[in-house]
Length: 341
Image 1: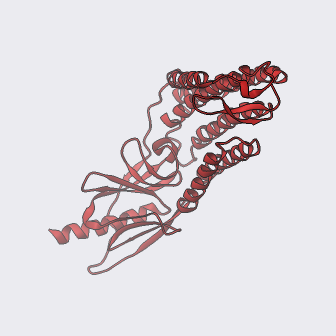
Image 2: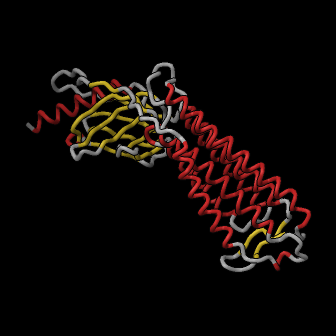
Image 3: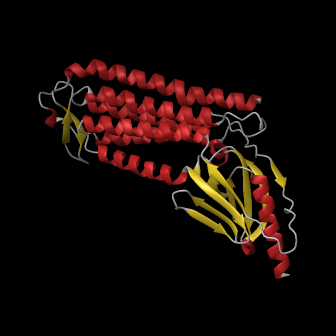
């Protein structure tokens, strides 16, 4: 691990883990001290620009004030730290990325927002006999969002930038084929352990949060539940793909049947075998668009086929035995080019 990567990881731990946890615990301490002074039931939700329209146990604030920020801190830390562990066969790959830097900044911003909005919602109810008399908290909500935006930017600049190190790549020689010979190559593209772990943890955190909000009768719980359903559907359709190379070009299709991507030989300008690091280069796993404009199906760290279209767009798919698939696709492309010539 290089010194700049070591410094970036250390900065992430401070900005994205230690400081947010301290802020959250201080906020929870204030809430716990004020809870005995709240009416029963307490106001737990306000209509926009109006008075309270949702009520529940006062301890709701303590549960949400701890669970939401600490859950996100844990989730972001797992995503950043676990996803940048390099496999032994590619020690020179990217060990840190702007995505991890952004997650650290987001962790700080969310913890600050919660540390403002939650104690403020509790504070305006102190000493009231009826929670319905609580004043509007829109100003505090806006202040919380503004502080979150400012501290997210601050958290970004408190972490050093680490230049991305591209994965290895190799020129592809066409697979030797006899005149008139046709060949078909098929393989699988499945999500790696890092991706499955991160996606599963993300889903569990969201489900647990939705259940807590539902049990506390928070009106917006269904929004989070809908997000959980959408994430489940995406996981089912994007965890595994089948990849096929034949005379018709490249076909990448989800085992669920959708989505699917087809690139025909006449569309291809070049083929390479590369090494891909999904989180560092594409910000995650699945059907992704990279910061450099590349698009594709990136499910795990490792070998991939990279196809450059004649339009200049680049498609990437991580797949087992990428060298053979790329070689055959190059042979198909070369044959199509010679036929056109």
